[in-house]
Image 1 (cartoon, rainbow, N blue to C red):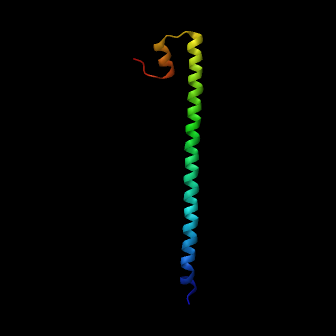
Image 2: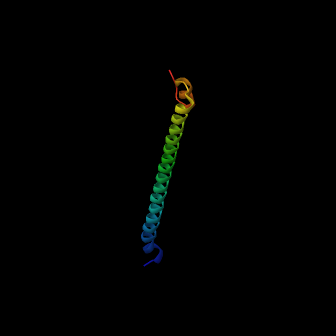
Image 3: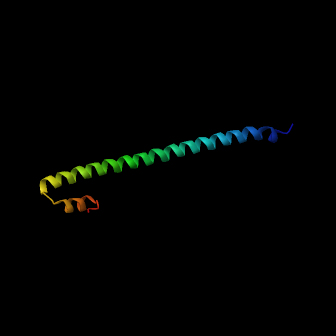
Amino acid sequence: MNFSTSTLPFIGSVWLLVSFRIFIFRSVLISLLMFGLFLFFYLFLAVFRKATDSAHLFLKLNDKTFALFQGRAFI
């Protein structure tokens, strides 16, 4: 019985398992990174919107200037 041919399926299955675990780890890592970026920008925009609301109250900006300051298109 040849040693190299009997261990090939075992080596192949181990390689497949390791590569699959790396693929899962990489996918989870990318998903967490994207969720973290989304959460960061969502909170950043929420704080920025709150700051512009406060600026609108304190500075008495008109609506067009306020919309431009917030980065929204105004009609």
